[in-house]
Length: 243
Ligand SMILES: [Fe+2]
Image (tube, rainbow, N blue to C red; front, side, top):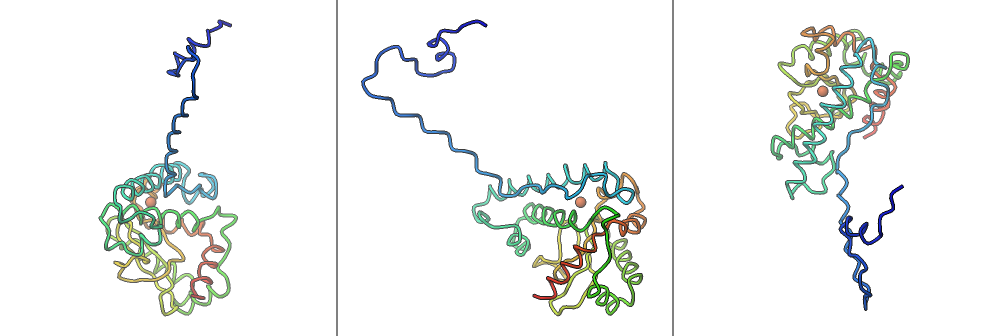
């Protein structure tokens, strides 16, 4: 191994070389401040990208999570960093005042919240489970039966023009309702026509289904029930009903 003289080595590294004795130790250079951690980060998928097949294919999940959701997170961090008025606000606070925010912040904050909610709304088919007795009872009371609820949810999803979301929410009066929102809006936003706590939501953007279903959004909505995480939806219903 080639030996390098320590002084040459120090010079090569741009360090002060100890050529002369120093009378006083030089002040240590101030450490460069560590970059501030990003305020918002992409959550890991709670299952493997291929775990939702055959309802949703692995390639769609990989791109949807790693590219689309990541872009909402990155754009949100950029927008918040550039606007002192938004500093320190958490995601829920941003979503709640979406109507007062620039479009870029509203879209990015909604996109981040909606997708984080969406990944947890789903589970591999073997773990999808069933609705709790309390949720099943509420669905039957509001929609007539589980099948009628699914049909109404599908109708709302297919009727959403362009990109958006379809939701099952618990309204402030405690009743269930199906609603849909455009773009990356959601029912927690001050701008939502139907406000409430989402307990179930499906992504009506083409990026959620186009690779497998192409233009057949209705088929995607039908296939999606296979991977709805009813345990999680039931927990959300119980929490929203207690509020
Ligand atoms: Fe999406």
